[in-house]
View 1 (cartoon, rainbow, N blue to C red):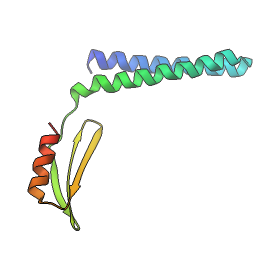
View 2: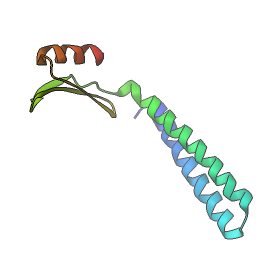
View 3: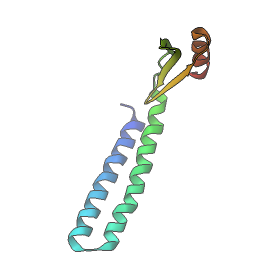
View 4: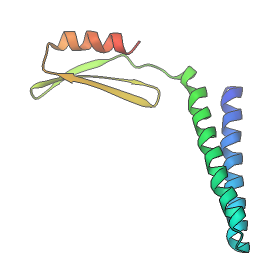
Length: 105
């Protein structure tokens, strides 16, 4: 695990702990201020998750596109990290695969 990923995971964990503590304390004491702080910490969690996603893009593998015919439609598909892409059409399967290869770079 890279140091950047480890740091991002610690940030996500810390945000989760802070949200839990603030929310539990706010609900137990009836403090609207602490509950609102828990919601605010939720935005920090979103930022930490985005950071984790951004750090991992360097390690994503790009799967080469594959093509197949599904009924009357040709479909090309590939994956880059957590995101899958699909390109479909009724044109020539080789042209579709060529276009998918150019888009996946």
